[in-house]
Amino acid sequence: MATYKNSYNIIALFLIPFFGRTLGKIDPRKFAAVTFASIMLYLLSLVLTAYFPQNIQLGNFRLFYSMIPFVLFHAVFAATMSLLWNIGSAYFCKPHEAGEYQSVHLFLTATRAVFAPLLGVLFYELFGFVFTFSLGAASLLIAILIMIWSYRRDKAI
Image 1: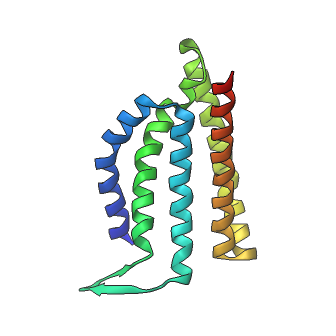
Image 2: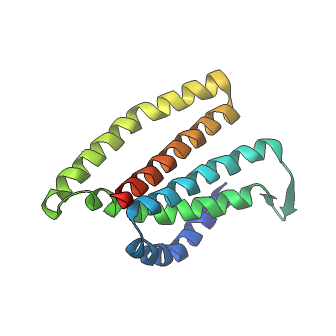
Image 3: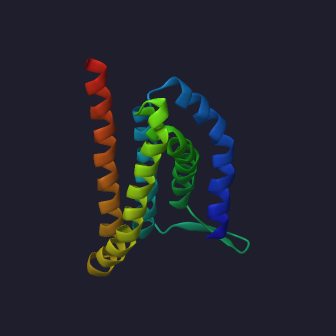
């Protein structure tokens, strides 16, 4: 598993400059939709491993074909989330309010960090791997739709 993790981090390092330029040209909500879509596809790629366990042995390393999109989507997520995290909340406020908005963002993230792992384990124990990760993907789809709706609503005004 370490090889998969190293792979997505290396790819993410090369993608950050591209996504940095992209973020400077588009609305952060559209960028957030891309970020959320990449992690949604990352989760769904992981679910595919339960149904497509085909692999190839390369020396001591076993490459699962369904892990290739997992690594690519995870790399896109790692690159885009690092950028979105740092500027996302500042976009929605006046310059002098950026610290307060980021504080609220961090507080809500910490609150989620307390409950999400517990709920994840509960759902995993009750319903299994596929349901739990599909639920995560469905939640991300809702987040994507909210970002698109928000962008279109403000664009129409």
